[in-house]
Image (cartoon, rainbow, N blue to C red):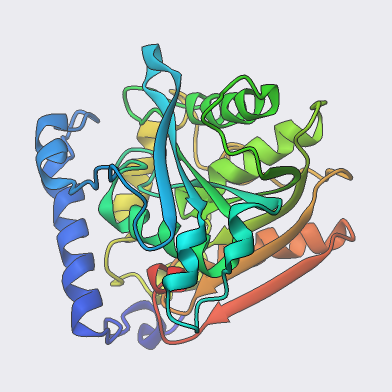
Length: 318
């Protein structure tokens, strides 16, 4: 491979995006320790979180619901209300959202399995936008983090949230949620969790819940091989090879390498739902996302693929 490919110039990014990514990169670097642990006191200080409002804001009612306090498993639910009619006409949601059956989008935040939460302000903003613009009930899952809790704890937490919702034992869950129209998805490592939770769900039986689609926004997959995009974009911010290698190491079982099925699941599953895969043109992991897409295509699944050119993966959430 030529030097022009192995040593490219860093991508030119909008200044706001560059500042945000520089901050996130600094947080991950400052809080990671050489022994494979994370300074949680420091991450708790640097991770800006959004508390839930006491009243609906801009047409959304936001509530935190606890699933299992012993493992800090909970989710933040965003439910459209009648107040959405007061929003600008460009908003697609209507007053009907308060009474008609709404699809449910179960979202898993990113952070390399090790950082951030469902209350992190960036993901709170994203989930609010998803709920408003799609007239959907958004469930943002707060799962356990590595390295304190390694594989498969995050998948266990995600699947247990599905079972909790399916049980309908939570009185705070909106009555107009259409559990027969559930979508799973996330951002980065959250996509990885959504995939593996969907695999488990496709081999399980639910009384009410049905997953009809999977949404993968800059999915976090990998392997021992160095792909062309990883080498070409080696200087990209945040998702650098040293950082992703470290994240895989603290997440995967001891003694495993990046060819573990958690990082690179190529099994064929006939019960898998239709899937949307979105990548960013500056995402070093895009080749793994493309392989993921091609693997699903061989199964004959309903698929959509979208590349946001000129942006790193985080911009796909806008």
